[in-house]
Image (cartoon, rainbow, N blue to C red):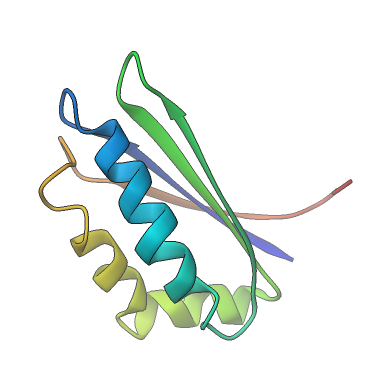
Amino acid sequence: MQDREVTIQTQPGKTEEAIRIYRDSVIPAAKQQKGFKSALLLTDPSTGKGISVTLWETEADQKACETSGYFQQQIAKFAAVFAGTPVLEAYVVSAQA
């Protein structure tokens, strides 16, 4: 299984809006992608920092979402709430409970 993590920073007072976009738009869109397994959004309301964690069946599935334009479409939904450029990282899931 493959993991993609995106670290974000929201503008002051925009964390709740980012959560709403993620919950109402990003998660439903992710569920339509081949190989999608799970999504999790972690936020710190006091700092506006957040981490999106998505799990994918294979590395190929995860990379396909980046090259197909899907990932860029999802990031664009947050243009009015992000304070900077998101940082993207990918990992192999080595253990899971």
